[in-house]
Structures are given as C-alpha cells and as structure tokens.
Length: 121
Image 1: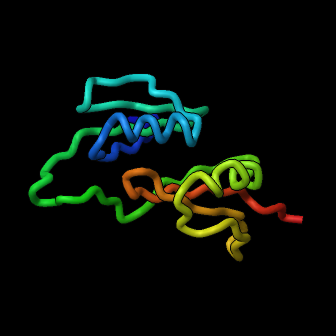
Image 2 (image 1 turned 30 degrees about the vertical axis):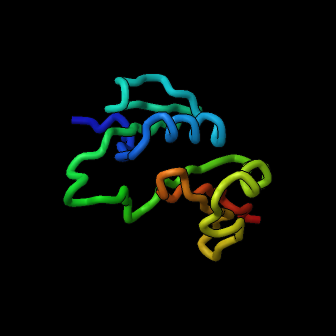
C-alpha cells in the first residue's frame, strides 16, 4: 500500500476571488473547477484544492491552525516579487534551524510560508 501524494483542501468563502489571488499573485493556474463548489490549482509540483464552505453555521470563519509551506530554490526573488503585493505574516529571515523563509496571508487569511535551505558551508 502506497501513499502517492498529498493535496491540501481548503474551504473558501469566494471561489472566484481565491482563484484570482493564486493566479495573479502566486502564478498558479486553475486546472479544474466545478462552479463554486470545488477547484484545484497548480504551479510546478504544488497543488491545492479549494471547496465551498461546510458547517458554516458552526464555524463561521475559514481557518487553518497550521500553514501551507512551500519549498523554493530562490527565496529572495520570491520575497522581492511578493513583499509589496500581499499581507505579510513575517518578513524574510534566516532561522537557526537552517532555513531562510517568510510568510504571507492569502485572501482567505490562510498562512503560506516560503522557505529555502541555507547553505551548509
């Protein structure tokens, strides 16, 4: 038995707005959609699915207690592209655990972290 890959599925308030954010800001492409109930976006080896809200009465706001963490090969270029276009969670920084990273919020309030391993030399 093998697990082949993982694709996060996030609930969103507005499918059009969400797809537009990921396409225009992060250069993803919508590769599948069923109206306002479901969509999948892709960029390189990264995929994320979105769905309409479930249990909105019980959970009135979208939420994810963690984040989406995207490894990249040129963190500084991505930082320069995004830093003035998005809401920053924390700015680019080198961390003692060997990563250079920053985090943003998407249009739904979900946190997306971008990271690159620091040179080990």
